[in-house]
Image (cartoon, rainbow, N blue to C red):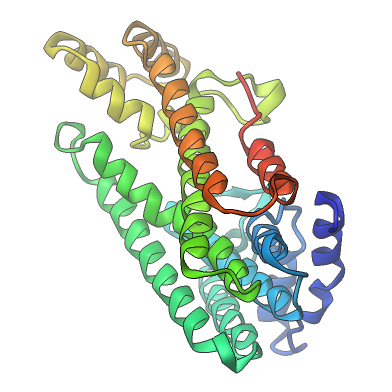
Length: 323
């Protein structure tokens, strides 16, 4: 079995197999600009690891891993456009550097190439995998629309359960599906496929809640992210929605008033209210809860424990950033 780093390196080594034409230059140069940015490649690596959990890594797993990575980058490009983001991985976003029209086309091209990768896999499971991939794509688009809709809704009309459904669709189904498809290529049975999907999905939920938690309670020297950026952008995060649920009527008024402040005053006032409501303690418990569900799903898979170690390592690497 390959080590964690060897699987990552084996994936990186074959990414040259994803090729694009030279013309139109602006379009394909923009794609190269976006794709060469550093990233952890968690989703494609998860696909390969899930394959190896049940069998030796098959060539088709690399094709699917490529499709997963291409689709993920497609969604990021379009997400940046919709959010009017100015930075992605510390660099100007694609639509700022090359223009919104080119960015839309670049995202579309990545989506098309994702399906071109899938079209090259073994016909024995191509239809099943393409169907799962397409269902995943639909859920992600639905989750993105939910996120957009949240922006226009008053905080009182939203519940934490609404947010949980949104992040499951927008973020977690990609992790779950990448794991499940890898398992299919590894000849896992239906129950094993379901269990590895649940592992990926719940790790994704835990990671997203952690991300929201760290925005308010993280250490910038560790996370590299400005504390309170979600608060400044009025994002409807897990901690904000849960704080509103835990607040009494007077605290709800305080929280709404705090969200109208500007700059550092808004950040400090909102975080102080979060602490009074002990939403930081709730978030830590929620992260642990979904992590435990994920590992229980992994435990259900009846294979030697040592084969699961790399998946555990991958999950822990996502969830070790502390405040």
